[in-house]
Image (cartoon, rainbow, N blue to C red; front, side, top):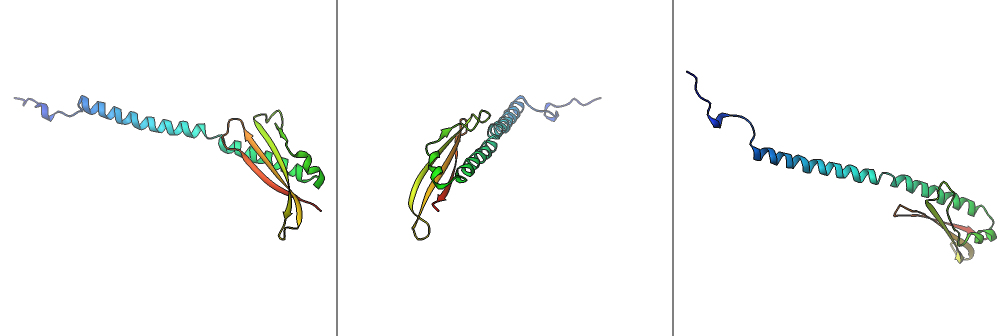
Length: 133
């Protein structure tokens, strides 16, 4: 004669255990997906910053290659670099400094080039000096 199987000796999971495991897995997957979304949404930031650095460097090179008197012509420049880079705005400020150098006896122009992207929160600013010969 066969012995009947008692309910306590059966293997498996209860409905409560199944629901708890589904909730735990759902919370874990949600966390992973939020991390992926955050990373994807901010992955363009380094590229935008590098492009802003390149634009600022290009403007600074162009301005400082001019003579001392011509540098002042760039003061107040506020423009888009080109049609391909229309999301960027470049602003140039030039100020005269009378007490420049180690003994404050030189005259110089402080050139500040700021580049801002329309969708990027932080801009980039570059500062250079052109001394009077």
